[in-house]
Image (cartoon, rainbow, N blue to C red):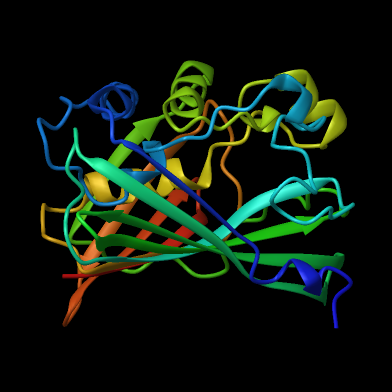
Length: 266
């Protein structure tokens, strides 16, 4: 059993007005008009952010370990995957409840060394009904980032494709819109000298949203993604996809490298 097993089941909740200004910041970062009332799928990442005093932030810019998430010592944190279900659209201007629960903490050994996986459940509700349910997988490691290698096989044929150039301004705008203070996304000196990346790291949720933005508009029931390899500021991310029997398969690439794979269910 993991030494952090006592943290499993820990919960916190917040109730607040879902502000349209939060959505406007994310819309600006994505280069699209802000939605008038209905919140697009997966835009909940910009909703009900918890402001924290600087004294509660760790050296990486994230909330200090041991406040809500367990005090894991491994220095590098990555957003590895997420699965979400949409049972109704969130509405801007409505009172919204967010309940977060630590569903699991598990230690594993990977090819690069020990890993700790934290599973976090998040439920957004309005008028007493759950509208968005998300299960996040966060991974912690002490291993240095591995060199990024090209895929052995070419990607499948796509029904659509869209390119997005990234730069430090986009990464900073997305960090601000989602209240993500992780320094790997905006502090080049920290990202390269402390965590060992070759540049600023593009947010996993940003890549996931680029996949959804490129996809033909469809009402979503479920959406899941898994980060494969990191993308770095200055790179152009290509969001591709193709229709499947019940939805769409999505993937993001750069220079022959698959960065993320995702699945949308309509």
